[in-house]
Image 1 (cartoon, one colour):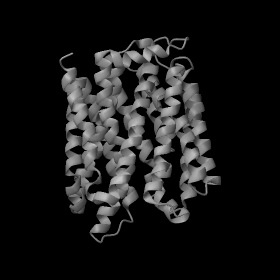
Image 2 (cartoon, one colour):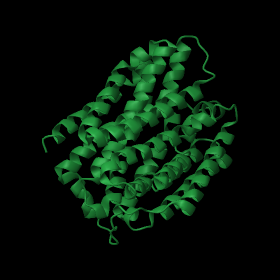
Image 3 (tube, helix red, strand yellow):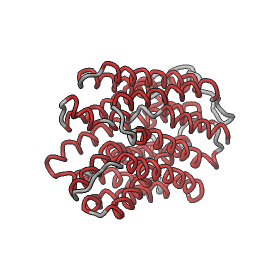
Image 4 (cartoon, helix red, strand yellow):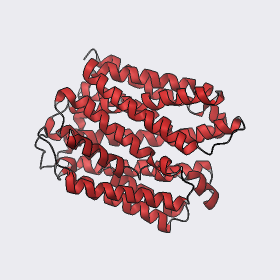
Amino acid sequence: MVQRGTVALVQVLCLATWFSASAVVPSLQDEWGISLSASVWLTASTQVGFVVGAVVSALANLADRIPAPLQLSASAVGAAATTMAFTLIADGLAVAVPLRLLTGVFLAGVYPVGMKIMTSWSPGARRGRSLGILIGALTLGSTLPHLIGTVDVDWRVLMAAAAGVTTAGAVLALLVLTTGPYLSSGTTVPDPHYLTTLITRRRPRLINIGYLGHMWELYALWTWFPLFAAAAVAARGAADQTLSLWTFVVIGGAGVIGCLLGGWAADRFGRRGTAAVALTVSGLCCLLSPLMYTAGPVLLTVLAAVWGASVIADSGVFSTMLSENVDGNVAGTALTAQTAAGFLVTVASIQLVGVLVPVVTWQYALVPLVVGPVAGVVAMLRFRSV
């Protein structure tokens, strides 16, 4: 239990750099004179970088060849360094976007490797709950910049603070983390051909389709919801001084609760059903987003919390399902490949929302995210017949 808690803490700290740039977009728009559509690349480039890093890792089987704590620590140091460089030298998108892309490359060595370490400490009967804890840590770490943003400081201070937090996580990982007794011995010879089985074998394929649907919605929501909420508040003529704290609570706090409930339900009632329920609830929230835009503060908060919890509740479930339906000696590589495909999808959905805002306004811009949950539910219904 101590090691699982340590893995979760390391993830919270090391992932603080992920949405650090997204949290300061309004400040960068003012200082650099960039448009909303251009600022999308501050987040999208990180996702692209993650895909690049994850693909390289998967093709070379790095997650199953390098000691996991060492890989996680070194990757976190790289993410912290590129974030600090952003703070010191970025003066526009020409410098900022490549630095955020590099941050994403390094983060590909943090999140999937953390899943592998957590899995190594988790027997099968508790794996859903364990990965739920880990994804909760991802959620908390990703929204941490919004908590830091509750203090009225220059954007450079916020970015530097995120880099410092990630560095602390890297040190903790190197000094304390170890792999557990449930770790399968990894392969030492790269076998990229194994990745084709994630498509050709029906069970992994349906799991990954469900995961892709989940990812289509998740990161677009995390990227845009703070601006969606700000627009909703402004439309009512209200102030938004506490918006950063509110975002941290309803997305980060509710997300952690959703992860824990999802992990518990997956172990108690089954993986497939839990994933289908979470996708259904989050899909309904997509359809209700126009109502959220016009709702009062209480209803907006309640619906946002439900969405924040349900949109992430199935993430650990899909990771658990995949780890249980692939060969154990390449589980790390399979999880890395899964996340690579998922983050590639997020680039498209994040861009789509940015394009839709000027056309349909914020009130309706999040509705198309429902496509992901629908695809995921269909995949889970078909998984039942396998």
